[in-house]
Amino acid sequence: MDIPSIKHVRDHLIAKPGEPFSLAERPTRDDAIFANKDDAATSLKKDAAVINELKDMLYAHKKQSVLVVLQGMDTAGKSGTIRGVFADTTPLGMEVKAFKAPSANELARDYLWRVHNAVPKKGSVGIFDRSHYEDVLVVKVRGWASPKEIEHRYDQINAFEKHLTQNGVIIVKCMLNVGHEEQGVRLAERLVEPHKLWKFNPGDLDDRKDWTKFMAAYETAIERCSTEHAPWYVIPSDSRTRRNAMIARLVRGALEDLNLEWPNPGYKPDDFDIG
Image 1: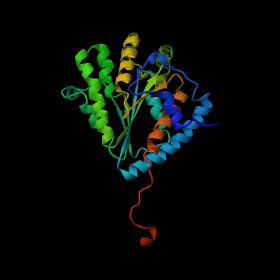
Image 2: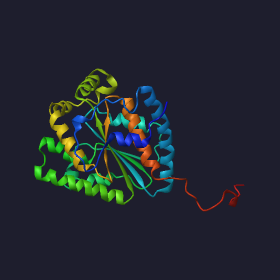
Image 3: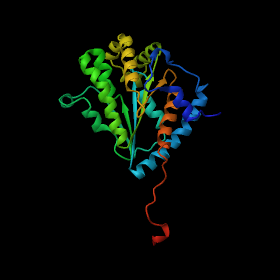
């Protein structure tokens, strides 16, 4: 098989900065990049191995970091993406943060405080399972902040992400675009499969009832916050294998863009006698 180039994947999935964006025009199932699941699985396996090696180089240098933002409706596959894309990645230099409802301590501070504290340190790959975008998504849909506050947050998020990128953080933002019908199938699976039942949350059904509102909120967030320094990629997510393979291409690309090499420690092996 011919693995699609990283440039092709980026061009196909990006929400172009500064241009109008329509989420309705983005498919939740797309065979354009990977014609079948076998091709996707092969690509994913190769990328997972390379991601592991590049992550180790990143850790050895400790000069920059990579932040992977996974945002999507319930069952879109955020945890599944982490398992698939980083299947071969050793824990050293990996940081995963799942953002749940904010604590009282977090609510007492500005909404980006808890997010900034979770940004990966230099030399690490960080993964956000949900993110600061919850504050212009669920907060907006539920009316937990005024329209004026929400409006300010798009610019604040863009400024925050620009600050990070100017300080050595490479950001890869992926919106996992799952279809309404497919979400229903996956929610039903959680009720009948013992290893998934613990993941079922009755509150997910409330969000499902507000699907149209959530899609509108996602559309606005992506259009307003897809920037040159931190663009959004919209990932068709009805196919788990293709989803993982596409995101693996993006993560590998972000690491390869750093042109990493193993650092020179400044000495030669024959300088030492192990004895």
